[in-house]
Length: 79
Image (cartoon, rainbow, N blue to C red):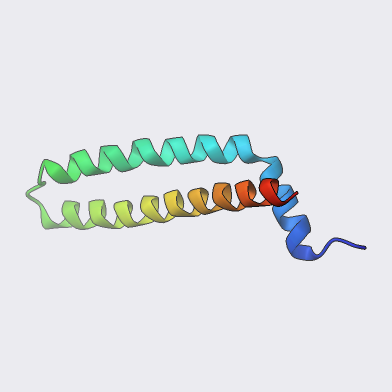
């Protein structure tokens, strides 16, 4: 039986699991640095806006990398 597109996609993504773990670690460090920068309460409202947008983008990347690792773990359990 031929693999579906979804199966081939996840096989390819899971083959790069080490890179995704590295990305997750980098995203975690960036989130911590952004939290520290937000905690320092920048006076300029423009700076604060950029920090909040950066936090949202890095947070989305963190969640995406976490989801990829979760799916790869599920696929390993069922295989």
